[in-house]
Length: 103
Length: 257
Image 1 (cartoon, helix red, strand yellow):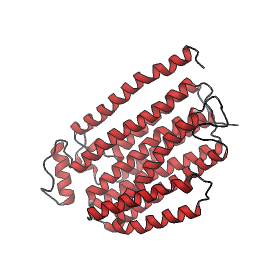
Image 2 (cartoon, helix red, strand yellow):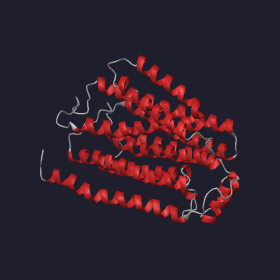
Image 3 (cartoon, helix red, strand yellow):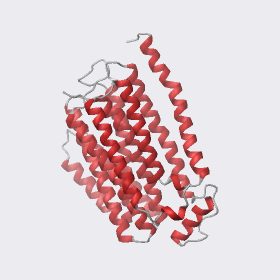
Image 4 (tube, chains in turn blue, orange):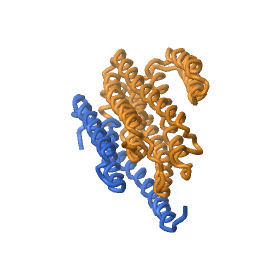
């Protein structure tokens, strides 16, 4: 938990976040370009990196890290819950089509 | 914490008592934008799920993005990330009441956003020239969903970036942005060849012009630091969505020869 008064003057942290996002993007491109992993592991690694990048954007650029705890939990949990529901509704079905051999 | 944030807002802008004591320790416009972004993230979530569903259930999914496309998309990503940084600097400038630098940073953000749209438009035109449509593609005739999901997902994102650039233009330049937008719309219509999809797509700017004009006519006001911050939330969200589209659509479908 950061005090709202202390973070505001330090512009430097936003440059660090920007640099980190560019480096993570470069890592993603390198992984995709060299095709380091087989597709399933590649998807997991790329999505993990994307989640880190989106956390940096939401936390620092969108300032959510410095909002009230109630607002942080409300927004993050409600959106996450919707994504989890979407995931469990649709993805088992996508695999089922393959397993049943429907072309 | 809530009190500290509220206090900070009051101190930062010198407008004590303008907003009622809020539940989230933030002013109502900001909470409203967060709620809109939560709902919009579900729109994009649904589109990404639709894309991924089709991708998983079709083993013959085409992988047409060669080095040129990946390089292009990487530059587009760098443009969006850099535009987020200039947006943050614009919010800082607005909070210290520096009007000139607020305008400059917002203009820089708009230029990065426009660069993204132009690069993405060139990418689209290239794919369409190769024979890709929303209903078919030349690489995998058995997977017509590729074109539909690709154009819907990236088109929706491109629309959001376009709306974002217009939004920032209204915040930064108010009514003086309208003639510039009209000029870009008309110039774009005449300069883009008639066989290109953006010859018609540029009319989105015309719609944006009408909406922006109505808003500026109905409620002419001087946008303050709060308005800049709320516009920034929208802009960062557009950046955020691309962080998922880029790996899922491009990096998972590379064609390295």
